[in-house]
Length: 250
Image 1 (cartoon, rainbow, N blue to C red):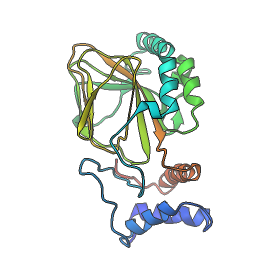
Image 2: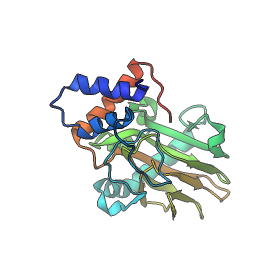
Image 3: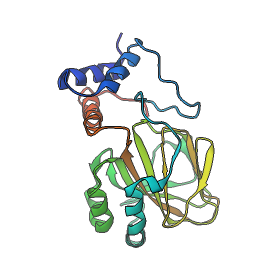
């Protein structure tokens, strides 16, 4: 019996035809059908959806990405927009809980999204035009981009992202002493105006031990191992999930 994921992958491969260059997705279908063994992963990497043959490591160096340089150069303007938005918006408006799963966080974790599940949040983009304009110019932006806030004394519990198909960039905006994030086995500290890059399919957790709010700009981008055609494939796969009313585990 085919599971929901295999049904969606097969439907999309049939839709795109034999000539599409998506061999790793054909392999993914074979794995989903039990025709090939699962891809071996690090014990701290356990996404719900695992595309085979993706370069895998917990941390990446920001110097290897032009996006990191863009974010660092725009830091003063982005931080100014964040501070203005933070003062003007209440939690019932632009800033909202990042997740409704109370078991995911001890304390308060909120977000001010610009993109959510690939869709623009117009009111927030209008409130922060410089940040929004920068994000709109990124050629490989993924599903989410947001200001992410972690209240003083809060901790985001260990979890993983849904895919191994993306990298996550964090630009430090307001960073009280001691704020840190662990990805895989390694813990790193945020710093204002500096960028961290990691693969969120690895287990990660974050802590703010201070009495003040920590704020970052979070940007998801598609994994550099993916070709433009494969990115189109993944975006279309999400559409099929919605069309078929299939819930994919997070």
